[in-house]
Length: 191
Image 1 (spheres, rainbow, N blue to C red):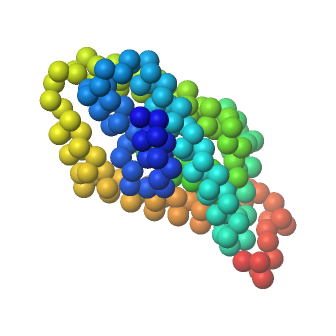
Image 2 (image 1 turned 135 degrees about the vertical axis):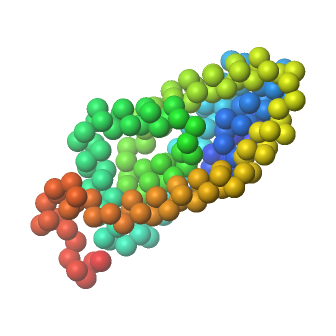
Image 3 (image 1 turned 120 degrees about the horizontal axis):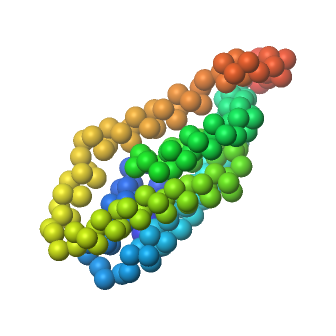
């Protein structure tokens, strides 16, 4: 299970949601609920941490203007820690795809340790709900329903929307929008 969840969380897009793997393990195995939850959360956090690091390396190839915009977004996030933690906490607990959030964090060079720890804690909570529910419904034939949901047009559209959002966020002039110092912007030749 660890290898499957880790692999899915290394995918930048179009991987099945981890909660569906948690549910399938809860429905289809005798693995203890606590082991499903802990293994799933640890593998998901490890995969997302590695994904963010890969995008951090990729960020060196991004144009200087976009790197400057991402740096401004990072600075704003680090200045407003309480709002950032609240937003991250809500996102970590939601079933929305997290790959693009970690990709953006990697590109923006956000400090990943605390970011990943908050994600791990949120996943412990959400995976507990999924695993306990799955164990309660273990004798119900629901596997086909989960497969249909993962491959549905709505699920694919949501992944495409999240990718488009990542591209749009990288293109925003965060220094201008957040009132940063225009003197620190890169010269025109760097753009």
